[in-house]
Length: 114
Length: 116
Image (tube, rainbow over the protein chains, first blue to last red):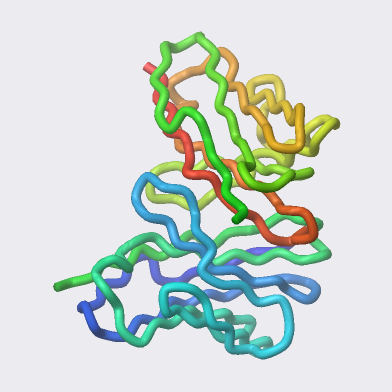
């Protein structure tokens, strides 16, 4: 069965500092990986996705993620955080073996200090 | 593109009544829609997969007679919570898959259900 682990429940970062959110997955075939962001009381917005090719993926809002197959990881990064980046971030895995279903990690809540 | 809406955004109902939540794909036709439930400060749990013109497929542990899903058209899926109880209070989110993007999902803004 597929699973996603986001080891950090909360992360606090100062505005302007860099941010890295960890994501580890378990999937028995070629994974399709996603990062979503959720603002309070809102739905999820897709930040970026990885299906194949270049393992460094660029997304919206200045985010990027790197797929490392050997480590079963898909960590999300941003070089300089803005106050508006405070939100909940979810990593998800899917793929052909799962049909079209996604499995989500538990989420990481990011707090931004002024 | 790939905009999904939900209505209502918030609903309060009395225990024992039923409530319907609509999920619409606004600028594309979605053969598949998904319904999730999210408890406070928790992740999304898939409830069911809704395919246009056929019965929904429910995840293990989800009561299909309590959570009725109808995907009557390529742009509309509805979730009806029947005989709602306070423990059904939650944030319900739908998503839809655009044509040609089988493995991607675009999410609605969610519906906050409170059962009193």
